[in-house]
Image (cartoon, rainbow, N blue to C red; front, side, top):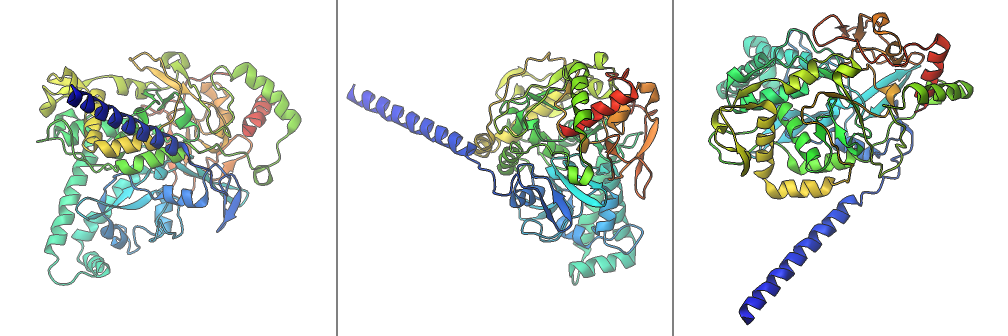
Length: 554
């Protein structure tokens, strides 16, 4: 009896100690004070930062923090030339034409790569070129000769063009003797380089297959990606090695802005992801898999090794929780007209606030609810919501496994792509359970619960603070300015150019004039429709301008 009592007491003490440690870690994880310069506007090396909650050191660290994206060998990238010139692929002029934002060297970016382009080291010590969150979620605007960096903003990266040109450069390098000699000279390779060429040819073959799987008839252009479609293919096709599961990722959406996102009850354009733990960790892990992450499924049990940098995901999410929306810079973009703003506020409360609530972005503990609107009600292009919910794929080696690893219904011969993605993502996270637990503790935040229909056929309406810095508009980026969005759909531009960073301070949006490297957005193509969201379209021109003046101030 005494021995049993001793064991019970010992076990009880152990449980208490573990619980106390968990509570301490939870408390500690929230102690993330703002850096002294987090809310200060500053100009550095000709770039103005608007004080959105990150200090300069945090901004630089997040810009280059890897999450498991492995595209090609890092040293190859540094030595690689463009396909049709002798210029280095990584030169700023070329990378900016692809929509990247050039950056200067710093402790987290010793090779002066563009924002969101980084080096990652795998478990074998190999160094990889990868992308980070900031490649798609950092904006830059030009206003009256000034350059503004928008933390968490909408990137104008031309993702598919980057892929196409990178593959072309690799093929030209192995195929042209002169390029090959310059390449190996930069690498300082001596003697037999047969293995190097074989490794490059192998990677070229792998990328060829990847791009064939993700081929689409309608180009994404600048600032868009069908992330869901590429995630589904990365898992259901590449990880399961089942080419028959491929489906064209042909519903590209704009890269969403990230301020307030980690405070909302749901995220993603179609409100498909509840934002309570472990939701954010799982969402970020699937993103890593889509952006050249690796997961090994075949031949493994219930959990799967992967390249996902779980240790970094919690830190990244925690920092984005601190992000605030950019405020309209009156000294650069123009002083706001106070009487006109007052008229605009009344119109906003009459026509907009039902879906786009007002929020204090400076409230560090804000808990926000997005308004979800059925797709057929808002009337915008439905390809994205349809692609997310429709169709099944073959489960292959997953057949007979529990859908929730150790629990839940077992997979039949076919399943939805989403169920397969969630199963494999959970398996990748639980392959390193302690890393995942630490990431959850680090990023933990209390958000509102969502009560959505599991059918997921909505589009999400979020608060509009900072919308002036996030063109183009609608989920698919089909409307260039807020002014155009307040017009009847029939009067909106049928096509326009994307890639110009110059802000239209009147209509609110980027300039749509053609510049070198810009891409054409044609709303007549499948998935690109600019119809729907016809709210406030009955306003007079004077009322429309008053509403725009108020929206600038949010």
